Length: 202
Image (spheres, rainbow, N blue to C red):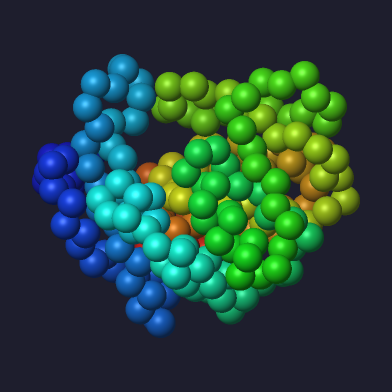
């Protein structure tokens, strides 16, 4: 990641990135350099309008974003209605709840917590400080739509897809707020036969 691709860390002016759909959804996001990160850890954070970092977030914005993301998936050429949503700790929690409300769907969350519970499956988040992530609960035979705030390399998402498929889960797709194209996640996920739907590309 070059300095030219980053916004100043102290700035909270949200720029309008290139939209990923012809409807010009204009979900606002920016790259900000992370300070004090360990070697091997991603040194960029994508700050966006739902994370509450640069501005307060009202309930109407949460609901609007969830509805927009759900409608984007509903109009995707490979749309399949899921039985349940699966969101990722921590950035995927808010968009998962928002999409659940918009689509009238139940959800589960994958957590960076290793708990003594049955039906536990572990996958990894590369380039994170804590790489181990866990899903809980019996999902075999269900159609799952994965929800996250962003996709960059697709490493975490592809690891999760592999774990879910081993557990006989049908992954119908992945929806996220932001697709960071520097990591080429879309190509990786599509090579696995998993469609990716995003509101914004950076």
